[in-house]
Length: 182
DNA sequence: TTAGTTCGTACTTATATACAAAGAGCTG
DNA sequence: CAGCTCTTTGTATATAAGTACGAACTAA
Image (cartoon, rainbow, N blue to C red; front, side, top):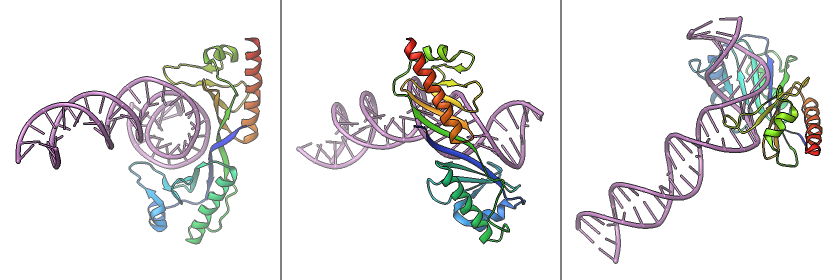
């Protein structure tokens, strides 16, 4: 079972903005400190996804845990700007999911040292003193996997759920084969 | 004895480490 | 022009820092 825990998506308003004005207009849900970072932050509610808006009109939505949530916050964001007359219409054909962070679980605890060799040293990185997880970059896949001794797994870098699920399915096969050999 | 202060231990919380992606802007 | 800043999120380690509480001590 692969579960999405975070989504990064981006889009473009197609127009340039004066972030100072925008932030002033939307009030307390906005935060803009150009000395600290060039983007303006917008969060509708506490713990809700964060939207980062740039001078160029490009923006990022981070923190959603489903595609629906990401799109819904994009819509709220565009509607808000449209209501204030900052944009013509609440549409954005450039909006797209860029990255998914998923978690999954292999049913048993793992020997990461053995796994690094089994999966291929050229595709893995495991330095327990630096980080407790094993980093695995499956050949041909567009996802990167972090494996932990507990059997828990993090799949990141995937453009969509199918890619993450395929990566996990392939990983499961590889791991069960390796365990069978032992 | 009791209130108040201070010290030490214990536990909690935070941070660093690593990964991916987008964006703007600054540094070297 | 490369690489860093920042943000999100799970995973798990060590370590740092910060809080809390009990024990011990002093003064009234």
